[in-house]
Length: 461
Image (cartoon, rainbow, N blue to C red; front, top):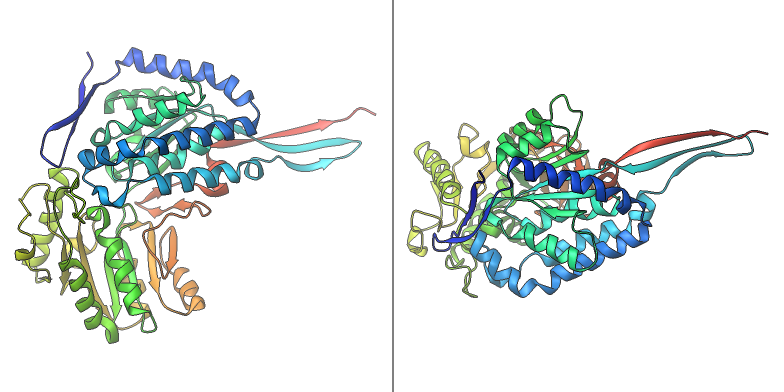
C-alpha cells in the first residue's frame, strides 16, 4: 500500500502539496522502463542530447513566475530573490558547453598496426536524490550532465519540495526528452533502499544529511554501485589583516544568512584577525539588525521562515547551548517580534564562542553564525580544520599566494579567496571528511557519470 508524502508549508503550517508514493512493483517497473529507453537515448548524437537538455532548461525558465511563489510556500525563500533559474541555467549551460570536450575519446594510437582508444560510456540509469534547500540548482548539477552523457535519470526529490521534480520532468518532456528517459518518482526511504540494494542503478547521487548518506552507502553495499554524496557542512571564513573589511563583512554575513542560513556552503563560523575583530563584529551586527523577517510572499521580506519546525528547533537548541556556555548574542530580539518559536526564527550572531561549544563544530543550517577572534594563520587553520566536515572555506586577503598556501593546509573541497557561498560549474563540487565523496559539475562530473571503456584493435596487414 502506498504512503502519502506531504509538503507542509513553513509559511502557515498548511499542507501545500501531497503525492502518493510508488509501490515497490511500480518503482521497479519505472527502473525497467528507464533501462529500456536508455539504449536508444544514448545512441542519439551527443549534439542532439545537448540541444534537448538546453531546451528543457529553458522551459523551466518559462515557468519561473509560477515556480518562485511555489518555492516560497514549500521552503520559505522570499520571492524578492527571484528563485533559482540564474544558477540553474548557468550550471546546465556550462555542462552543455563542455560536453563534447569532456566526453571526447582519448586516442592512444591510431596507426597502421593498432587503434587504441578510451571512450566514456554512460552508466545506464542514474538515481538523483535531491534536497529541498536549493531544489532546482542541486538537482540540475547531476540531471543535466547525466542526460547529456547518455544516461536515463530517475529523480527522487525531497518531500519538502515535492513539486520540483514533477515540474522538471514535465518541462524536459515537453521539449522532447522521452518520458522514460527522465522520470520523476515519489518514493519512500524503504523503497529507495530496496531499489539501490537490487543494483537497479549504475550511479546514485545523493545530497543531504550525513545519516542519509550512510543509508545510501548501506543500501549500495556489495552492489558495486557508484555513489556521489554531498552531505553536511560547517563552512568557515577567515578574515586576515589585509582584507577589504567592508567586502568581507558583507559577503560573509550574506553567506551566513541568505536562505535563512539553509545553504550547503553557507558560512557558519568566522575567524577574524585581532586587529579587525571589533570593527567586523560592529558592521556584521548592523547588517543583520536591518533584516526583515516575515512572510516570504511579501516583497519587503528579506528573511523567510526556515523550511521546517524541526530544522528551526535544532538551531535554537545549538543557540541556547552556546549561550549557556558563555556565548554572547549580539542581535536584539526586540528587532524581530515575528520570531514565533516555530519556523519563523530570528537571525543571530554569537561572539565569545569557543570550540568547546557544539555550535562551533556541528552543522547548524540556520541563520546563526559565530565570530571568533584569532591571532594568526596557524590558529585559524587549526580551528577551520576542527570539524568533521569539509566543503568550502572562505579566505579574505589581498595576497593570493598566502591564500593558496593556507588552502593547501585546510581540509576542504573548495577554497575561496574574497568570495563565499558560490558554486562554480567550471570547478569540481566536492568535499572531504563527513561532507562526503565524489564530485559534481566540471569535467570531473562527466567522469563520475560515465565509465571508461578501452578499445584495443589490432589491424590485420
